[in-house]
Image (cartoon, rainbow, N blue to C red; front, side, top):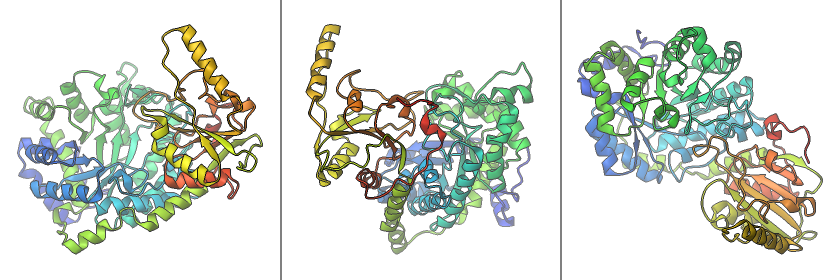
Length: 570
């Protein structure tokens, strides 16, 4: 397939075309293969040495302190003759690139404001803080559509539950990112083709399936991707997600159903052919079980390149992964033409970002750049979005809460990951905020471990009896990340039927606040009020407590997924 270097998204001038062609012509086979890989880089000498030794095309760095990230980027540039792509998951703010970056808002949180400009602001801050530390490639926006409320992966990361909203907010994000890339150009990535959010599985742990018909897909995900391609999206991340109906349509009834990363009919046929995408395709992480479960790794790496993926995200055994592609080219299992096509696109992306002629920074310029990371103006925008997005999904008439009428307040934390709930940052922030309001805050005691049914019943009953008369109101908080651990994430309680489960909600005013997944109502319909705050931050804690107290109104809006398909709330 011929790569048009002068067409979007590369749009190279004659000098850029010449650099790409001259560079490609002078690369050894080993160097060409290296350009296909993106390492997961720690902020240390070993990662820099690995990328330099294997001449890799790019790296997605771990998010450490901004100055450390920037120093690592500069060392990588100095160690490579071809400038690297420096990627980051800039989905929700500059914190995707550095640990001291601003956590602005989850994409769904932007939609809850009913203001598309919020996505523009998000994109602007992501780009400004990301380019400040040296990133030139953002793995965003998330172009998934959250059709299925049970899907935990697409929930807060998606811009909504319908194609029109996702496209509008994704376009606003792109616009903002273009305005905010103050310190270097930034390539954007739409993900995860062919579209997550239809089934309730997570490609981290299983190959997921988009079960739409061809007509449904073209009217939804197809519409989103066509729109973003028209807007010049530079790269598309391909998910380990199968699309059986389109595979059957394009490749025949006998074609194997494979995830898109291994399906040429979806990449070469649908994405390149029908949608006309000319940019770089990159796999989602190749550690994911949605990919690794499909066969032997060396063969899968070859198959994903032949299917149409130009870049491979992450290495497992670096030397073995490089050898798998190198040997496949030498043996003719990957044609030299296909290899050159992929490398040409990678180089064209770098040329479009002007990485080959990027000027060096002096010390004063570097300090000015790093000063924008976590800037007060960005934090203020995060606080504003936290307030405007706070969403009251349900209230049975128990809000607002007041220490005058309900002085003793039980705070019940629930997390989807290990750790002492009382010591989690969200618990600490909420407890401090509620105590500042004048509430006397208590937490439930940890349940004892049991070894028999009889012991379990005794411990459960004792814990529940201890609850009697202990508090006047309760706030249950949850922070479930929604990605990477389980195929479906539902609330898990420390002790079923014990004092951590709001069995007392029918007697004591109980509010549930989710600082993560927005779809927990199915598991707690008994509570008196249900609030979605979307992310756990000081800004969302402050905004939530202000509204629980009645000082500000809940103005956030939720789509129908927040009701979890419930027709009756008991």
